[in-house]
Image 1 (cartoon, protein in one colour):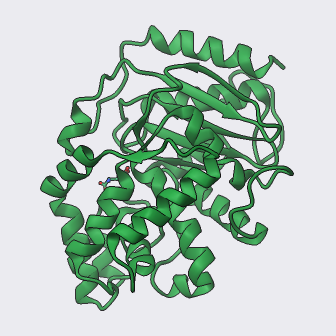
Image 2 (spheres, rainbow, N blue to C red; image 1 turned 90 degrees about the vertical axis):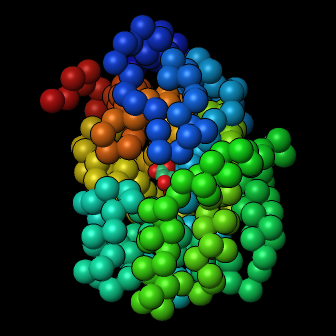
Length: 312
Ligand code: GLU
């Protein structure tokens, strides 16, 4: 088994030479400006070490990875009551699909598709101003990462507010079924800003440590809830490519359209990767490949260790 740093260095060197890097997200104009040649990767370990390669200190838009943190806050605050608002089944649909929502009468399939994440944000916004909630989300993420230098990129939030018609449709649709407490615009204001949080791979990897449940990592919520969040990451974290990610990587992960992926190796490590180009399901193309390589090199999988280079 190679050591982690060797594996990261080889992966970053290989990714630097790739021509086919996927497409950056164009539907949020600010994200369309990000350089597709960027690539960063970091592994945070419970003993406080962070190993990394490439552009691992550059902040990027975490987008849907923020849904892991808001789900954590919601479960901590509301407990199992949350499940009356949102399910926990894989959707098999695109991240912003509206189709299923009508069939299922405004109750989204899971907290990681857009509709589900909007319902979660709405649930924790109730009784608060968006500013207060965003302050709480930032405090949570900064405490998890042990780093106060984590901020919201307001230009990205404005850009998504100006173009997020589909998310407004999803929120309005849920409102019509009585599954949204606040006015759609208010909930979406909070949702777009949580998505616009920026973190580097090193910060994000650290922030994921609480999800490893390893001794010595921050305890942000109880172990049962952590296990369940990992289960949802495994089954729903990559939209309609969640099954493929589980098949290829075998670890719980959550992607974002900024090109980041947070991946948890329970008991061992938290991994963050960033490559802005996306595949057609909206997940980082090279990021997915990089995590697959790292997991294979290190024999990391929740389904048992394997050291086969090409498991197919
Ligand atoms: N803010 C993005 C949206 O709602 C998040 C999607 C993602 O990262 O997958 O469209």
